[in-house]
Image: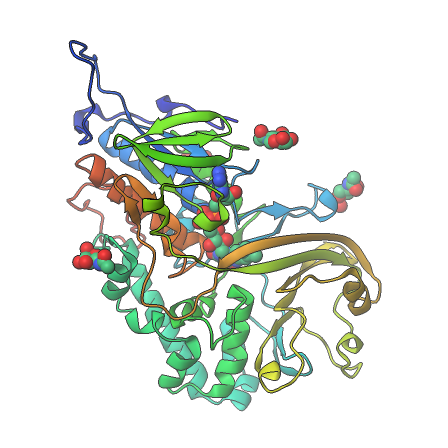
Length: 504
Ligand SMILES: Cc1cc2nc3c(=O)[nH]c(=O)nc-3n(C[C@H](O)[C@H](O)[C@H](O)COP(=O)(O)OP(=O)(O)OC[C@H]3O[C@@H](n4cnc5c(N)ncnc54)[C@H](O)[C@@H]3O)c2cc1C
Ligand SMILES: *[C@@H]1O[C@H](CO)[C@@H](O)[C@H](O)[C@H]1NC(C)=O
Ligand SMILES: *[C@@H]1O[C@H](CO)[C@@H](O)[C@H](O)[C@H]1NC(C)=O
Ligand SMILES: *[C@@H]1O[C@H](CO)[C@@H](O)[C@H](O)[C@H]1NC(C)=O
Ligand SMILES: *[C@@H]1O[C@H](CO)[C@@H](O)[C@H](O)[C@H]1NC(C)=O
């Protein structure tokens, strides 16, 4: 399907038309009136691929470069790992995120996109309390929003003053560094090692979250409870397994938001504001290189391109690549996550379901730690279980993330048989992220770029838009004498809400 094909949408600033650098060979005596456009194929309509079309459109707007973009997506929807379902399949009811659900203010591309595209931001409902379950005991409960859990009198009593404070300092300084990626002086990285060192994060990606926080004087109890609860709900991994950079990301959801009706609308709008031809329901099967170009074979036949942007984790795509390219992509395991969405008429999980005294109030967001299992106890059956607002006076949507299938029997037992609609989805959600010192390359061959090389560093919707911004900039510098932005910064770079790529 062609979502949009209107080159006329964008003004072509031909005054700035730039020559492209790729040579074209015409048959002798034949002089074309104009050089054909550079053809770029993008594979994947998730955060990475759709934002790539948008960044290219920004360069077209600014420089009038002659590029034709085809975007291929094997599914029939835009959004990839960011998509929604409706309780009972009833679109009059509020949409529920099935994949990526939250982003924060420091995620400036998504934040800005919501504003520019007139979407509605909704504060993520995390105000009404959380608990940490270890499989046998409810270790900690708190009411209020995210950081208030850490600062509450109860937290002070259980974890002391220094551990929450030191963790907060760590997260804040990581975010401060992260924000430099939107400034006019943002680094342009050629590989992830380069980016990691320019942000000063090498010691974060080479240590586990536990090791790093321990070295900062954070107590084991705090790490194995609040910190691990966060790494498990956000990345399905434990604090002693996941590297400290991704650990910090999972600790940062202050002011978490999502888009009313679904985050995928951001990605639909990236496409709407681009000039790309969008082919949904169209699997790419193979790519071969031929005389310095790429021949891409898909459900709609063969097409030739000067550049390819692969915007999906390669191992999950079933795309055949030339060995000299595929051999450069290290095997990357992903966390295979089960998402179980359902409705119930119980306003909270009965305490008896957890074999707890009937008087215990089970909080609407239940996170977990592996610490019980580490000490020989029972492993929690799920990573997180959270109530997501009512769909009527007496029915709620609940979301469970788990590494194993949640059976009907289990649901029925836990919720006293009071289950309505059930929807299951299995995702290869995010990379398994142990400490590492090496990453996949961004440019796998001349003209062949791999956006998801960013994911083993950080895997979020926002960072995929940053990874594609960097890659599009690299592609444009390789093919034309321009990136996304003019080299001289614009006059309003001092503005606090300046976002590189949007405002340059
Ligand atoms: C349950 C869950 C919760 C998450 N929570 C959050 C969160 O709260 N916040 C956050 O920021 N991130 C979250 N994430 C991570 C986030 O979803 C990803 O980091 C991000 O969406 C990845 O975007 P992408 O475009 O790189 O990849 P994808 O979204 O996976 O897009 C790749 C696309 O390529 C397509 N494709 C694959 N093979 C082919 C082929 N052969 N031909 C054509 N098309 C193909 C796929 O169908 C897919 O649409 C979550 C993920 C999951 C699964
Ligand atoms: C995609 O294919 C499915 C099944 O072949 C079809 O039902 C659906 O309408 C198609 N969607 C689009 C957007 O083309
Ligand atoms: C869908 O939900 C709306 C709002 O609750 C309700 O009025 C309507 O009857 C539902 N539709 C169906 C088909 O159940
Ligand atoms: C968003 O709304 C503003 C003000 O109503 C309007 O000027 C602008 O064109 C809208 N943008 C889009 C993308 O619809
Ligand atoms: C990464 O990029 C930097 C800066 O461009 C370069 O100096 C370095 O050699 C590259 N490293 C690898 C491993 O490619």
